[in-house]
Image 1 (cartoon, helix red, strand yellow):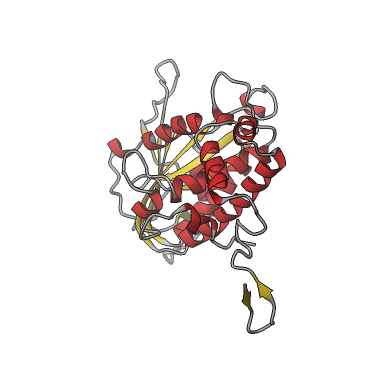
Image 2 (cartoon, rainbow, N blue to C red):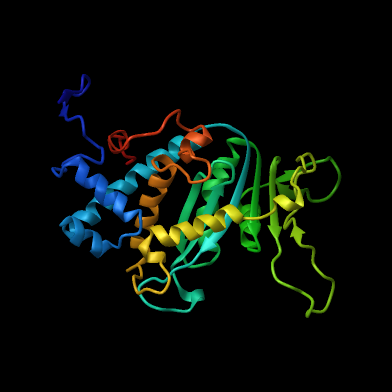
Length: 305
């Protein structure tokens, strides 16, 4: 127990952390969360570890509070150059509905070199979803001198980013100043599909959807414009999150439940699990933390209000 010198209030060491008020052994909690992030379904986890459904819901809801703290900490760092890949992965929510009406579309924004996930945001595939996801990227642009966003075919990444993050070139000439992306920001789209059957001019395979600042360095080669790392992550997510598993009826109950499982996976992927390719925890490879975190250290982090 501790005592605050300013207000005289007593509080425990676990105050405002994941472990506050929990009596279950830490080893059991760790095993349960590990099982959930390795593909075990919600009901199957409750049966396997003899845990009540409300208890597991409470643990996962608490665990998502750690994500906000870690994300804020990551956004405080200053980065020289980043290459972000953007892609989407789809699942069903509540019932089998057409893809355009489903709330199970998940936007993935991943750093290419370290495999650090900046965003896992689910919802209906519309501009509102992309604005929420790219809001994190807008904060990251303010901390980065050179940022490239690369996507496979989806043009809304560039359109929404240009809408929320653009600048004006004031050259002293008459007329309205020209709008461009902020200095140091680049967006590239790899156009998919064939246009051999369509009329009109053939579009280029690699495209810049919006004008960029004239002083931005153009150093992206055509062969680097792809989202292959995000595609590989999507395959891994289908194995490790039961709601994304194909050929099964384990749909997410609602959008909130799906986002909760994504937030839990975000924390484990970025700060606890070593990536198969880099052999490092993404947060360590990215330089956000100096060494791997243990489960005890992670669960003792104060959660954001």
